[in-house]
Image 1 (cartoon, rainbow, N blue to C red):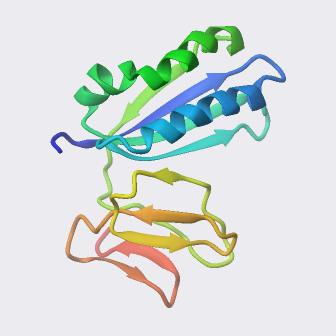
Image 2 (cartoon, one colour; image 1 turned 45 degrees about the vertical axis):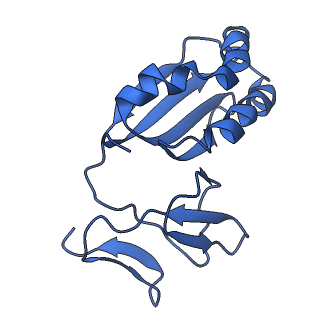
Length: 157
């Protein structure tokens, strides 16, 4: 696998009352894309003040591959065809690159949002709620998980 990791945030303003139908449609895409080689993880969030706004947070490797290959996969066709009818305004895509070598995750009483993963990560964790998630192996030898405090961290950051 070549390319650098990136995060894609997709702000999806839906017409009122269409969030559940949107998520049913997008779950098909989630299930298909989780086996892609350059896929890392994805989370869907619903707006607290506006439940008809969905924010997708997708983590991938290789932006060039994402733009030229992943966005054109057949499993996206039905989603892309239906989306214009569900939107109240155009969706907004924003690309980000990591500035921290490893994500921070909190364990114990706090909950981690449900995330799907391609299963290629090294460490599997399970929250109290039963949700399983994966963290990639440390990018730097000093990165570690501190189980006594329950926080994944990197030294010096």
